[in-house]
Image (tube, rainbow, N blue to C red; front, side, top):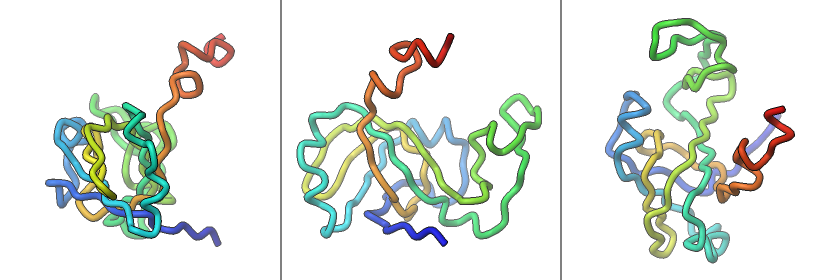
Length: 137
């Protein structure tokens, strides 16, 4: 069994499933537990962050296919759907400010109360296909 430690949680105006593109237009707050606050040192030097979080309201049920915005069906691993076997979400956000253990971000599509599992800085050299040509050849 794999165990994750929740490092914090999301504060969002969305309390139930909504369109991800709509959710990303709104400001959210990531509240980091005091035990992990030291891990935020110099995070404000980063403009973009990748947030790994849990879809905490999905329960144990999952689907292996999902419909897209165009109405077509594809496998869950070929989609951004929430009903996944491990209920894990990943979103890149823009850091607007840091105040103590609170990060204010835009671009997050997580529901209010979602547990945060990890945060990593977006690194254009590692996370951008244009700067990693061996991935696109």
